[in-house]
Image 1: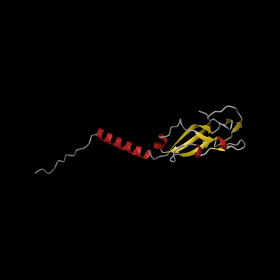
Image 2 (image 1 turned 60 degrees about the vertical axis):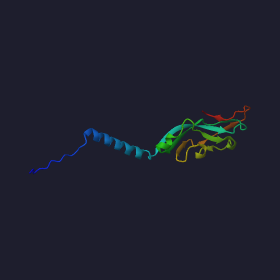
Image 3 (image 1 turned 135 degrees about the horizontal axis):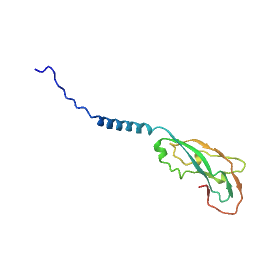
Length: 137
């Protein structure tokens, strides 16, 4: 009788192991990175609505905003359409306007990390032209 029993074991090739480990690593990376917070900084225009009776508004045209959210939530934002919307009837020349989340229409899953400058000073001057809205973009 044979003292030694020969066992045949099916071993995957080196290329197969590399492909499987690469797919596994990519799937782990995509699962963990989708929940990781990302931050995006962009220049956002400041727009005024209901300004037909107010007159000419002089204010900064753009504000730097840093948004924080997951990759999926940030991918759903159209950054070209973002704008701070300020009601012109609430403007007084003496007091600066504090730009808040209420002025920028983003989903609740997106956090606003910083707004620079957060306070904008506005100057009003009477004018005869009747424009619909003033927006800096």
